Length: 172
Image (cartoon, rainbow, N blue to C red; front, side, top):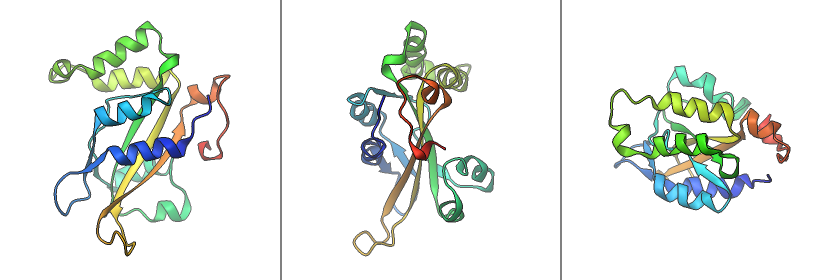
C-alpha cells in the first residue's frame, strides 16, 4: 500500500486543537481525524488524543522519530503525543472487535478497562502507522507566537513486512 505521508500529516494538523490560551497542549479531534484518514484506507486508533509536555523520560521514545538537530531541538517548551492508525483492509473480525472496544465511550469510563492491552494487541498483529506530533511556538513572522505542529510518521514492522508495503526512507 502506497501511503502519501504528507497527506496524512495535513489531516493530523487540521485535527489538532490548542487546549486553552498560552499553552502548547493540544487535543486531537478523534472524529475529524478518523473521517479524514478514512479516504486513505486508515482507521485512527482512539488511543492518545491529548498531548503532554516533553520530559526527559520522553526523549528516548522521541529519538525513534527525530534525529540529530531535530532531536536536539527538543526541550520542555514542546508538547507532544504519539498516535496510531491501522490499515482498514487488514482488519479481520477480531481486529474490528478490538477497534470497537476502543471507540466505546462507556467502556472507556470503566476503570478496569485496559486500553493499553487493546492498543498493544492491534499494533502487535496488524499493519499500522504511528505518528509523533509536536507542538511548539512558531517564530515565523506570519505566525509569531502561535502554536505550530511538526509530525513524523513511520510504519510499524507489520506494515513494513507486508507484501503491499512500499519503502519510505523515513521509515528507518
